Structures are given as C-alpha cells and as structure tokens.
Image 1 (tube, rainbow, N blue to C red):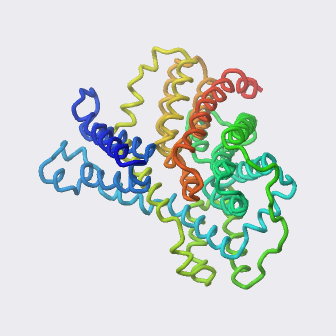
Image 2: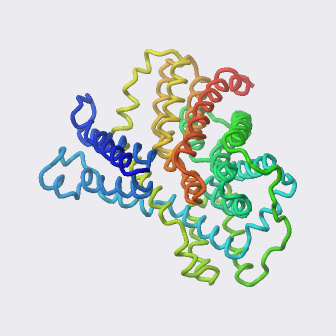
Image 3: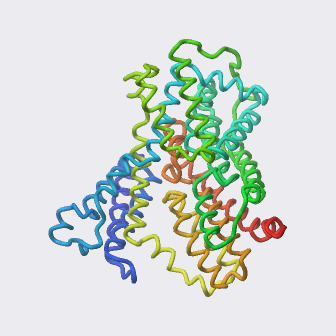
Length: 469
C-alpha cells in the first residue's frame, strides 16, 4: 500500500471511530457507541491493512484499555467519555492475550514447529496424499477431505495447525508465482471451518445450539445432527474446492511431490511422536473424557521444551503475531457483549413482524455477518436464545421451526470466514505468509453468500424430512 492510500485509510478509520459519538443511536449506551466506532475502524484496518493486522489487534486492546476500562484514568476519575458504571474491567481485555483459545494455538504451533524440525510433515504428506496422485485438483481434494474429516471430530484450530505442516512441503515445490500456493493455503482453514459443521462435537456453536434446544425439551441425537449437517458439509466442501481451483489455478499439470522417505527415529523424534500422538488422541476423544482441548494443548507446551524436543530457536520461530491477532479479535468480541452493542445491533429489527422464512433468513444472515467479527461461539450464544424465544412465542409456527432456526444459526456461523480474525484457522493460514487478507476475503465472501442459500434451502426443504422421522 502506497503512502497516500495508507493515509486515506488511516483517516477514514479515525473518522469511523469518531462517527458514532455524534449520531443519535437510541438505546445504545455511550460505551456501546464508542465500541461501535472501534468495531468499524478495526474492521476497516483488518480489511485494507494500513498497518499490520496484528498491530490493529493490539491497537484495539490498547483503545479498550484507554477508553473502556474501569482502570483508565479518564473513566475512573472523571467518568469520561461516559458514566463510569458502564466501564469494563481491564482484565477482560488484557486477559485475552492469555485466553484458552490462544493456548490451543500455542500448543498447535509447538507441535507444528517440532514436526517441521524432524521432518514429520514429509511422512504425513506421503501417507495422506499417496492415494490421490499428483494432479493438483486431486491433491487439493485429498487435503480438504482429510482436513474436514479431522475437523468433524476435533478442534478445527488443532486440525489446521497439524494440516498446515502437511501442505508446507507441497507449497515448497511450487514456483513462487504459482497461484495454486494460495489455493493450498486457503484450502486448510476453509475445510476445517466447514468440517466442524458435520458433528455435534465438531465446533462449539453446535453444542450451544443443542444445549439451548435441550433446555426447551427438544433433543437432537448425535446421528440426527449428522444427518442434518453432513450433506451441507459435503455440498459446501465441493463448492469451496471448485472455487479455489477457479480463483487460484495451478500452472503445472502435476505437482512434483516427494512421496518417499521414512519417519525420523531419533530419540527426540520418538518423544515428539509420543507427545503429539497423546495430544491428538485426547483431542479426538474429548467427548469421551471431557478434558477441554485447550487444556490438552498444554501437554506439548509443557513437555516438548522440557524433553528437549524443541529449544529456544524453535520457540522464537513460533507465530507470536498470530496470537496477538486472535487476542485482539476476542477482546473486541468481549466489548460487543459487555457494552450491549451486540444486543443493540440484533434488536434493531422487529422480528415479530416478519414471517418464518424472513426470520430464518434474517438470523442466518446475522449469524454469518457477526461470525466474521465475533467468535463463532459468541455469535451463536447471542442469537440462539433470541431465535428460540421467538419460536416458543409461536412466531415461527411450530416446534420444528424452532429447531431449524437454532441449528441454522449454529451452522451458518461456520460460514463466517472472510477475515483473519473471523476464525482461528484463518489466522493460522495468514501466518503462513502465503495468503493476504483480500485473497481470504475473496473466497470467504463467496462462501458466505453460498452458505446463506445452502442453509436456508436445507432448513426449508431438507431438514423437515429428517426431523419428521
């Protein structure tokens, strides 16, 4: 970005930050108006990158500490720029830099760095891609199917961290100007996000929707959820595969993959296999033992340095800027919740005056839009209770419609993947250096539009057949 364009974007961001302070936003607190300005400015900066995206995240946290925190001098001493009782504890913002999801990231990064040190990705590449041959479209399909399958049963963040190590040697053999490098780097987070829809344990929003429905007496069995969601996952994956091939085609007809070689059998490598295997098994079986994936992630964090598998060099090589990026996104989501801005945005619409199809469409659109800026879990947690309350009031026309809209909100959130801060897998992809934010947004926006129609059509025509049985 040239200096003139950077200056224009920076000034526009400042203008967006200040604008809500001068608008008559009825029902929104002063703290909420300030958060709205920060939300708009951060979104602009994340898209156009006048400063690095991780710097924007740190700027978000800094602004929150200065203008929204109870400990900020202006707020605490002078109730400026809004009443002090509207302020939020500073730990709510600073604490995001040690958020459990960042620990999950860190564990995945350590495993990936150790795997790269001992050449594990070469062995994984040989095992996973050998059945698909060397044709670029087949290689891409194999990667996406493997990623989506793993993501259906374990954290999509952990899946992405592991699969990024698989594509590293593939990207390495491609020419720097080959656009297929972008397709490979985007395929992993895209497939991970879509794969999480397939099972109740694939991603937390699914559990949020199931729990809210269960509290109303509507129980959705594991197998029923898969019957509802797997077809959406398959259709979405096929569309994403086609889209990536069209937008970022390969220059070569075959990829010169090295599918030979053996796994390292040195003592540190064997220790890595043991620690990595234990971590992955615990991630895969989280539903059985109940140990959160974020807690499991601390196993490689603690053991790999202690056992000498990685050292200071590898620790310095970790993508720390990605942790800052995600921390800023989480912190902004906290502001939207704590200041009431998220609820204010949702309540701008009089849902009771709309018909069932319009309500379902509206909630699906809202879910996709909010999920690009908030955590998918937070988005679902905000929207599902409102959707269910509308259903129980009779606006939606029956208990079945309540299930449709709650499940629709959860699944639609997985299509919110247009920005690096939209979802942890996206942030990991950005960390590879192979993808820019505009490239990611190009795919993400198309998938978001497609996701709206896929979810809406499924809820109207396919899901009633499943839930009526």
